[in-house]
Length: 413
Image (tube, rainbow, N blue to C red; front, side, top):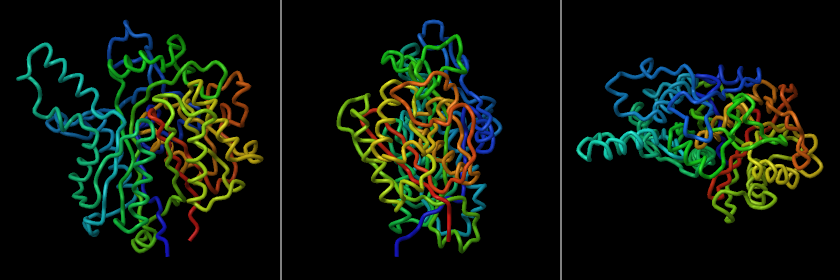
């Protein structure tokens, strides 16, 4: 008999909330997290806006000495993991910790730490580089730090697949539990790349919005006048476990992971495959893996980046997969509010997908003003919609042609 995998805890830090509840409520209110960048001087940058995490004081969570070793991306991951673990009411002291693992990824890792230490190298010489530099910067250290903090000795690693990173992390954790290699997994992603090199690099690619005079409307997925994505930051963490294990400890089951689909475009470094061919296969794999039916999927949390190519091709992909049901399924791009969280996007949007099932509510795509004739589906414009939600799929696609699709459904024992 195949092992079923359920979600029993969730944690998040996003540009619109410092926890899951705040994030969800902000999304239902259509709140934008995009403002002028405060982290550094943007006077020489083409893009001067981003979706920064607001009100986060690391000293509320860590000792000053600890912070010398923790890049902001790892701070976000640790705090979100704590929320997920606390909300699950798991007591790890009662668990076999060799059967509890961590898969938490980051698309970029400790970019601020890299820039800070590089500046020291250039200005002061190599002897001034911090001994903590490497373990601050590397993309696997958030997973390692979570494992160390809670003494979790099961499978432990990071996924790195650009913007599909945490979709892959959750999918890999799902498979780990399903095949019996662990009973519980802490999984997701974290990112903190709103730095001079982060913004400057994406500006050089001409990937970012330059709507600097009106930040809150800059992220506008599927809308005719979109001009690029908006950089965001934050973390999303799920605690997932095998169904019988959750029932045995009397856990509150939030939802079930139905299935996953992973594919590659094998086409271009940054552009999606024509007509979303790779996305089509990822969605079809996910739906088949979860034994879902098209008519029973009420909501798609779209990758919806607010770039011309992604939104057009994702729309075409949804039409190809859903056929006659494409007109009736509700779609939204919550990046319109959070900006693009890069490696943590899949996890945060997975949490949003789960909450849509719990609350029978579809969060909106804000800033949707002028429809694009090439993007002509129902993107839940500007206001949430209330309807019964039994099953959801969530898309994340990354530079390099990485595609991940996660399926979630209402838990029925």
